[in-house]
Amino acid sequence: MKLAVDKLSKKEFENLLAAQPEPVDPAATAAGTAWMELLSTVDRTLLQEIMTELHYEPGDVILREGSVGSAMFLIWSGRVAVVKGSLRSPTIVMYRQPGEIVGEMALLENKPRSASVVALDSVRLLHINQEGFDMLLKTHPEFGASLLASLSARLRAVQEMASVNSKIGRELTAELTTLQTENKHLLELHQLRQEMSDLIIHDLRSPLGNIHTVLNMLELVLPEDILAENRELLMIADVSYRRMQNLIDSLLDVARLEIDDLPLSLTPLDLPALVKQAEMLFAFTMKQRSITFSTVFPDDLPAVPGDEERLRRVLANLLDNAVKFTPKNGRITLTAVADDREVRVTLTDNGPGIAPADRERIFRRFAQAGSGNTRQRGFGLGLVYCRLAVQAHGGRIWVEDTEDGVGSRFVFTLPLAPKTGANDAKSGN
Image (cartoon, rainbow, N blue to C red; front, side, top):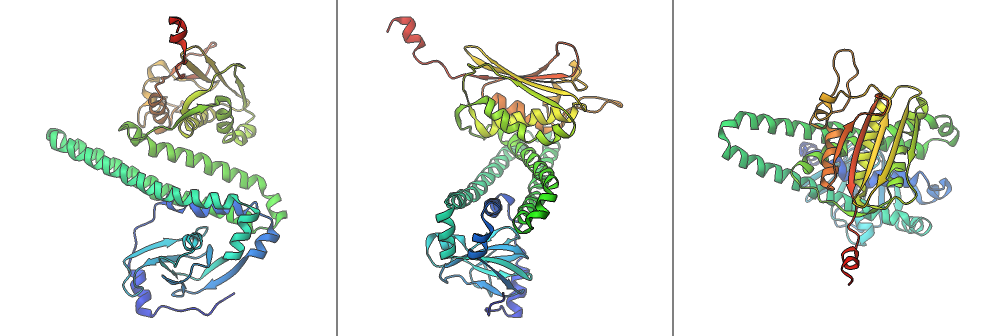
């Protein structure tokens, strides 16, 4: 469906293209991804009732700043520009791509739009008006919570990234001032850190997010019979995305953990449940390679005070390392025991093992164990993250021998919360 719309003049459109905005942090596009995941679970009859497909050509003004916010749009294909200020000489320009949403803020606030939206390519949009949006929230209230959470995540991600970059910049400046003799070395470190940051943010996160959005879009628009025939392929892609996203998040957190700038949100955690969540990331791979994964937990295992997201990633990184080096038809075992002070978690595999000389080195940046024709163990920053995250919780992590000398055994500890009332009981109070 093509509507009669305002169109930019040739000069205005050229000015818009010439603005060349900086690439948007992929974390800021989380709203569209979350919505795509939820929309794929909604009954298709309802989707057809509340969504209308619209087409726009390059230069078409889809929304104007100051107009009534009566609808939102999901971008199906093409790119749009979100413009603040005059379209003749814009002050802020941002891109939005397939799978993202626009117009949601004005719809939620019931206020005039704070920016204009212009088609940069031939664009296909899914239009959801106020009535359809209300119907969607009435039948699926989780959409409202998801949208608010996603918008909050956008702001938080931008703020956190700015905080990290600012602190790193200040520290590097101080080091350069006080350690002039190491000036060349510090500049090299700074360049390496900047290159790694650019690699993660632009060269990994952005295309990875696009892949995930496309997969969700396919699940939304493909016929059910085609989805059923290709379910295994989609599962492989989704599992690979989640494992890659987990690794990228670990890489980004390493720098913050090293400078003690990653506050932990401690809550009582059910360790077996966390292990189960981490196992799901690798269940398909272990099934394909006939790897047996077993867990042993005592019935009275206490809750562990910890940051749920960080400890889940520790378990995922360790399990990823074990799966990577465990042979076909191999076995991986995870156990946990507790005493009065701490919980001790042990992950054992029957892979090639790690030489005693390498057991400290693999927890350092970019270190790997193994030489010659032996497949190398360790993946640079994954185990570094495990060490930093466990230490941030007040625990320890190491590698030790297995009983039969085959494979490797990773062990880490987490302190338990002090028992309240113990001292009072001893003193008779």
